[in-house]
Image (tube, rainbow, N blue to C red; front, side, top):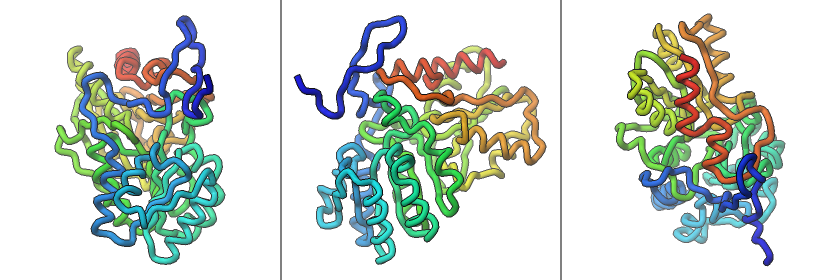
Length: 342
């Protein structure tokens, strides 16, 4: 039987049977967790009702970046560019020059690896108003190194003029979309797509571009996190509370520009282990950004500084929950590491 381009046997996981998975569209939600379908696509389609300047483009991946919802609502403002990421971003740059606000979608690996030079020279250098919403950031697919954007932050953080956002859940994505459109200049969004977990609404959270926010306070540990790892950090904090370990969670959705003032204020509070948790390689991401801020200001956390992130290697393919446990991104893995460090 011929396989589709989105299905193939997974890596033979050590110590277990060969598994198969719909890894391209695997949900990040735990069983029973609340989710919301395609928050990016719905939010953009709704915003476009009020903003006739908004257009959408995709490189043959509208269904897998949730842009198909926008395309259905606004077919005259949707452009299917085919499997040509360089063309996708060059066209978006041209539309921005003509006064439109283009939202260009593809996978994060294709933006970071295939189209970097075009993003750099056609968009960032010209400071054009292009919004890049790129799915499958970090380890959010089990499809292997060809689709796992484990190093996209390291690639894009050094690019001048570029704002970088790593949202936690569906609640935040719905707020991020209008904030991206309101911001003048290029934006790179690490997009969570499909059935996206929903939890920050329980904390009364409101997204503000460029701002880090304390979601939960605690006296023993400070977890500085972004993206889906804020969800895992909150889950870990609840689990550690049973051991009378009090964990604070500082959510940092804007990776660039980094909210250094808030990070420094939280890190200066004494008596806490500081842990940075991110869905990205430990090389060049949020962890090293926070470490650099603390070092430049001469801050040395009383109980130490640690990183939770992906290793500096190409990762296995396989079932996503298995991979998250293997590489330390699962809630259970976060709990274990913090207990060890304390």
